Image (spheres, one colour):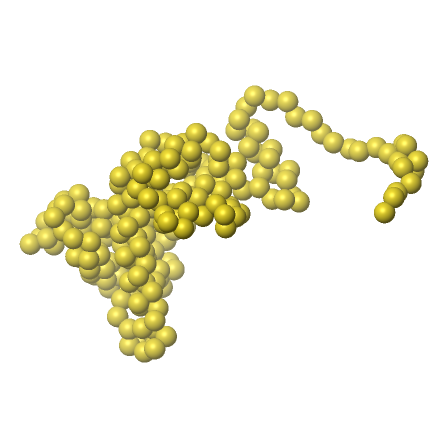
Length: 231
C-alpha cells in the first residue's frame, strides 16, 4: 500500500501540550486523557522506586513480584511463586493495617490516594507472612466453594468464607500479635469462629453488606483482642 503523500501536504493535527513539574497533575492528566489504551493508577506506579524495592526484597523470599499488568509468560519465574502487586496491596491493607474493608472494597485506591499508606516502608517479612496465610485461607475458600457445589448452600457451614478472606486475614494478624505460638490453622479456625459469632449477633445480613460494613469489621477485630478467646 503506497498512499499518495501529496494529499497530506496541508494536513493538520490537533494536540494539546501540557508543561508542569507537578507529579500529581501529570498522573491525573495521563489517566483522564488516555482513552485508546487506558492507563490505570497501577500502570503509573509500576516503575516507582518503592515497587522496584519491593520486587527486589521479595526475590529474597523466592517470590516474584509482578509490578505491572500484561506481563509476558517469559517474565514469570516458574521456580518462584508469583505475587501480583494488587494482591500485595490488599494483603498489606488487611494484615498490616487491619483494614480488610479497604482491601476488599477500595482496590482502586490502593494505587492512588492510599498508595503511600500501603507501599511506603513496607514490612516485607510481615507481607510474606500474610501472603502465606492468605494462601491457606484461599484453600479454605476453595473447599467451601466445592462443598456448596456438592451439598448445596443450606447444607454447608461457614459459607461466608467465600466472601471474607481478607477479614479472616486481618483477624489472624490481631491474634498472632497476641499469641505468636498459635499455628496458622489454629489462627484461621479462630478467626472463622469470631466472624461467625459477629455475623449471628448482627442478624446474619447479606455477606455483601456485612463485609463492607466498617462497624462489623471493628467488632470482629475487637473480639479478637479479648483474652478469654485464647484460653
